Structure formats: structure tokens, C-alpha cells
Length: 192
Image 1 (tube, rainbow, N blue to C red):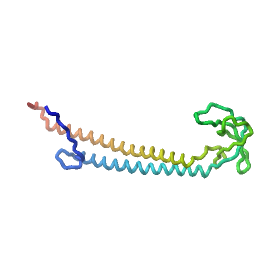
Image 2: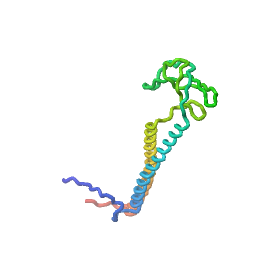
Image 3: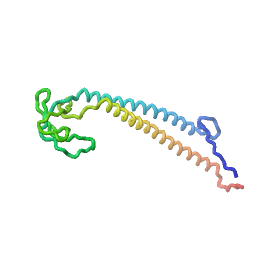
Image 4: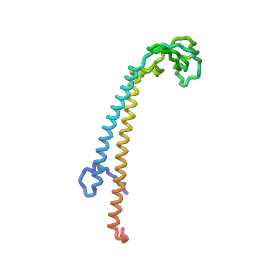
């Protein structure tokens, strides 16, 4: 006995044929529009996310500046949280531009004695802040944010398409069941 082959017909929802239903055409349009929206939403959301990261990094660079600070206590060699991190937390004192003295904890090199001068970053309010992102880090964060935001927007659009297709599938199956009930008269079919 020869094996039967199933042939796939591409774009069957767009072609005229007696088996095509209205829900098939609606499903085809939903899929087409959904994919277009997913691509556009992913691109636009990615561009917006990358722009937001770049603006935030520029704002950090504009607001934050380096200040010379004096260590108040010895920077003891504490176990680092990251293997490549050789800095530890220690109390430092620095003078704000208005002359006010500030004291806070900052990340400084390990085993630095008290009284040593270290450089710390402060924000526009004179508080200790993290070092602003470098241009390379900004690009990495912008690309990562763009990819994640774009993928999320695309996934949301495609998820909506999937839910719509499930609804159409349920409706189509209900219509088929109703037609089978209408055709079936309760007689046994003689199949030979």
C-alpha cells in the first residue's frame, strides 16, 4: 500500500474555495495585521527605550561630578561581593561647593588607611552617587533595554493575536458542530 502524502497549500485563507469560511478570512487578516503591529511596536518601543536610556545617562553625566574626599576610617579588607571588585565601603568626608562638610559611606579601594584622599562621585544635591555610565556602558544598556522592550511589545501584540485566533477557532468548531448536528439525522451510515 502506497503511503499518502499530505500537501500543504500556502495562503489558502486568501484563495477562493468552497471550504473557506468567513472566519478563515478574518483570521488571515488578524494574523497579517498582528504581525505588522508586532514588528512596528517592537521597533518603536525599542527605539523609545534606547532613547530613554541614553537621555538618563546624559543626565547622569551632567549632574554628577567627582569630589576629593578624605577617608574617616581605615578601609578594611572585607570579603568582596563580586570576585573582580576590589573596593569596600568606608566612611568619607568631603566639602560641598557651598563649603558645608558632608560625611557618608562610599566605595573606596580596599586597605586604604584613614586620612587618605580618595575620589568620590556626588549628585546635584551633594550626596554620594554612583559613577555615571561610560559611553560604552550606555550603548550596552541602551541596546539591552531596546531589545527587551521591543521583544515585550512584540510578544504582547502576538499574544493578542493568539487569543483572537483561539476565539475564532472556538467559534469555528461550534459552527462545525452545529452543521454536523443539522446534517446528522440520527441514522447509521453504511460505510463499506
